[in-house]
Image (tube, rainbow, N blue to C red; front, side, top):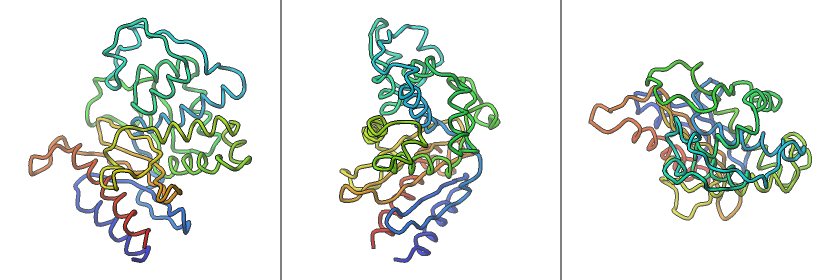
Length: 283
């Protein structure tokens, strides 16, 4: 199956739906790329948390924060939070900042996200992304307001692009062995290794993972928003990096014409894109 055939399949998957799908994929074996609206600004959902993690690790590398700092879960941290498990737990639990980063990534826990961002600033995280060259990524809010309408403006949430997130994942991957990539991220080899391990620990299996063989290793961060669903990850085959895919659905209706919830089809679309890459790139 040629790269062009795979590209045709990806376009057909997107064209079959009434909502917008922006994506970028990179075949890590050949270096070839396929994209659709990859440089267009789009709601980031929780895929923004990968850059929050890396900004925090840079601050730790520079000695400005301590990953072993104990943090007490306070009830105030659960306000306006709609993801994760801490919001249902008894205040008083103590975890480390390192564990808060892990919770923010593997369960997308927004109590943990607040814990991390209270030790940074949005300006710092946004500046970190701009310094890396992620020009379409704009960190605007600590936690998106729960009352946002489904047709909210881009300026009311953190935004990114499929190309920005692919660049970030590629740089983290490169940093597993490249001092130049480590320097770009502002982290040493140990912290870059922690970042990759944390991405691999993702427990949510919808989106990219949903149509891949069950034991497929994926280092990823998914997200959800009022306008759509999103997922960004490095897919492995035979324990080696195979391809990177970053996919963002937008303007997703609450209900499809056949009655299926819109978010179900948005996640199915992302899964089909990953499946097409898995089958098309391997042959």
